[in-house]
Amino acid sequence: MSKTNKKVTENLRKQIEAAVRQAMDKGDLPAGEIPKFVIEEPADRSHGDIATNVAMAGARVFRMAPAKAAQIILDNIDLHNSLIEKYEIAGPGFINFFLSKQYFAEVLREIEREGEHYGDSSYGQGKKVMVEFVSANPTGPMHLGNARGGALGDCLAAVMQKAGYEAYREFYVNDAGNQIEKFAGSLEARYMQLFDESFTFPEDGYQGEDIKERAQQFFEQFGDKYVNEDSAARRKALVDFALPLNIKRMQDDMAKYKIHFDNWFMESTLHESGAIKEIVDTLTEKGLTYEKDGAIWYKNKDICTEILLKQGKKQDYIDKLELKDDVLIRSNGNPTYFAADIAYHKNKFDRGFEKLINVWGADHHGHVMRLKGAMDAVGYNGDDLDILLMQLVKLVRDGQVVTMSKRTGKAIQLRDLLDEVPVDSARFIFNTREATTQMDFDLDLAIQQDSQNPVYYVQYAHARICSILRNLEAEGIAARSCTDAELCMLGAPEEVELIHLLSSFDSEIIAAARDYDPTKVTKYVTNVATYFHKFYNACRVKCDDEALMQARLSLCIATKNVIKNVLDMFSITCPDRM
Image (cartoon, rainbow, N blue to C red):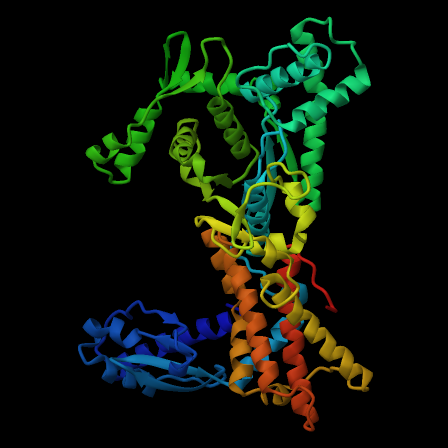
């Protein structure tokens, strides 16, 4: 709720409590503890702007019908200077309160006063939060899942920041381990095949055209210099050449997508610093590892079983999960991805982050509990690690699923999408469906420049307001500050509904941060655009009553500012003309 709304609600609670005490002191209500009660906004505003269940919550203490207790409370309440205009008793004993026009004037003043900071809150209390997202494998181009994860993760971090957290964006680069060995073998084969077509390509190698391109680029720079080198030296040279190019390509793609990470964390630093060995030693000292077949195993089954039992799960349920232990160090002495993952997440906590949020694909579902359990095992609280599992996305054109790029005829990559679809559309549309739901991304819709495209619809509302202001200025009519009396002239249903919606901006931000769901904000700003169009169609901004015209201009400007705050927060263009 806005600061104005919060102030009204807090004052009303104090006034209700004072009324109950006064009624008890007078003997109108039985003496006792004031019951816990709720103050909330009714789903149907015809029933009031604010409602409380205090009379029903206190039924046992008051020992009378809630409707009667409600009347006694109202007989003892003092609502002077409360921005509440009237009240009524409804149903079995609810008390509904109706806000005064002065309240709506205060909301518009707050929006004007707060400017770009309107919607900010202290909900997060400055808590340090890391949002890790995309983290694509650097051995090849980024794909569609990265497109959805990028938009979701970046906008989630923006929401967390707006909600009062200290949010930090990080990309984890898997530049070590098995995938890099496979990358090296694939590059080597493609390079050597330039000289000898019979050179064997690894069975599990990367088949993409990008591998051939990197091998060709390497050849163009070094020629046959590495043909007669031993395989290890040749592979190292190829990886040292190709990997930085791939990482630069990922950084360029993210920049084009308007995503800028605070840090690109290299997995290799965990290997070089001894952090992975330190993790294994720590778990071994705690008795959580054992050796088998020359490898070091982590007792994942025991740890996860303990977590589930604490959650109240039954043993037969746990048995059906078929939990297994995990290898940390392979028999060849190389650490597994899971060992590096434990070290990486411990590193995050070691850097002072109080909450970790990972945006992962749904195929990582089985990895969630074991990683949270591992955080408990190394001395942190696994509940401070939250993992948002993102479902698959499909591209659709003309109602048909698209799997190949029109430009290249190959599997669609992130850069193919951004070549075809405006970045603003991609960022907004990917945040119109919750991460936990599968998504069809309509390519035709994303490039449309009409109200069917959700981002265009919102941008148009902003541009329309700017046009209204320009046209009036061309006629010599400039917006000015309004008096309270002038702002209180806004009483049409469409005006009141719009101001109500604008007043709930920070509530929507808090809900989105709490639920890790930035789609709440895209839905909110779409509603703002809809309510503005309803207001504009029902209420003439330019009218003969100069005071009313200025009040309506104030409402237009407040709406424009809220839309801009949302689009700026999500790094989406906020046009003045369309």
